[in-house]
Length: 256
Image (cartoon, rainbow, N blue to C red; front, top):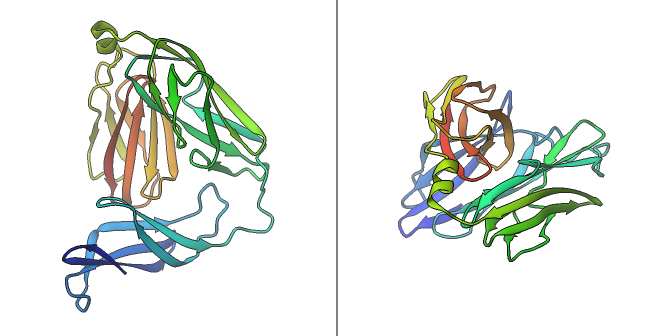
């Protein structure tokens, strides 16, 4: 139980379902009478097929006025692979940005037991020329000055590199590379989601869908507005669209 603000308490409860353990949120003004928060509908399931579905001993930590993290215990099978065999960064290849642009990278490690894990927050990110483009500890890159730099992540003896070319910022270039607001409908959605990316002026848009734990549950690459299939359980998800120049994140609700 935590003090959410000056007049509200929050408590998180765990239950079981066929897909894994369910997390529910309850709120109270006095600590005695609790009300179920119907907007929180979370399911804990394995990330990359490694962790056990059973979780216990949850602890909620308040980072600031709007951000919380939940820490819980789980089991990792003794036969789970511990050393990755490959490491891949998305978006891949050579990328051109303008001064002032930003880009979120995602790194995934692949293991011999056919599992994969998002290690974006656990590897070490580097930029060979931070004065041209800097990258923080979570893979968020900022283009600062014209030039070329290598951006790479290292993790357990593996690495993957992306070359970044930063061009001077001009109104014409920024207009042609600008990713407009991404429209997602219907929302809430059952299974088929229409992703409207408008006239992007670029060849590819990388879509990444994450759950409320930050786990990547689906990735797609599209070059035009289209439907994508969401084989996901009910809950809240975040859709991130990345065209190599701009990043837009939107929230959707899946209701089966």
